[in-house]
Structure formats: structure tokens, C-alpha cells
Amino acid sequence: MGSGTDTGARTNGGTGTGEELPRLLDAEADEAFRTRWHEIQSQFVDDPRGAVHEADELVTEVIRRLAATFADRKRDLEGQWSEGEDVDTEDLRTALRQYRSFFNRLLTT
Image (cartoon, one colour):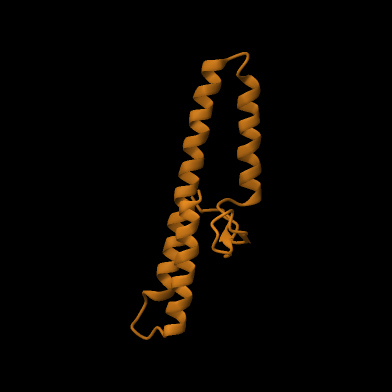
């Protein structure tokens, strides 16, 4: 399964770092998950147990998608610096900054 993530950035979401943080999900996936959540909530009155079961499944699916997104991002970061000994200091500085953004994103999720 591809990550389907949007590589666009957004503001720091309160990290205090002033850096841009990558989106976790593309807009389409975000909207689809939110739509499903609203549907689950609306069925609670008629089927509380079923709604809770579906909420559990939805949360599990979102966690899986986020885990795939983070794994893809980590692999991308590793690819920027780990190949070969001829990586210059500027490339390493850029990689460290991107790791910092990724780290902050992990902590604000």
C-alpha cells in the first residue's frame, strides 16, 4: 500500500519551533476518515455497540495509515544521508533539520 500522503507542509501546530511540519494525510484521506467518523457517530443511537466497533476499526485504520506515512518519511530521510561517504556537511545539516521536523511531528501527533 502506498502512503498516499501529501508532501505539502503546514505550520507547526503549537510546537514552538517555528518550522513547517509535513502533512500526515493527504486532504482526500483526511476528508474520507472524517466522513466515516461522522457516519459512525450518527449510527450510535440505533446501534451503539456497532458504532463503537466501527469506531475501533476506523481508529485502527488511521493508525496503520499514519505508521505507513511515518515509515515512508523515515526511509526518505535515511536515503538523503546514508548513501556513500561523500555527503557534504550542508547535506547533513539539511538532513538534521528535516529529522528535527519529523521528530517534532511525531511528538505533536
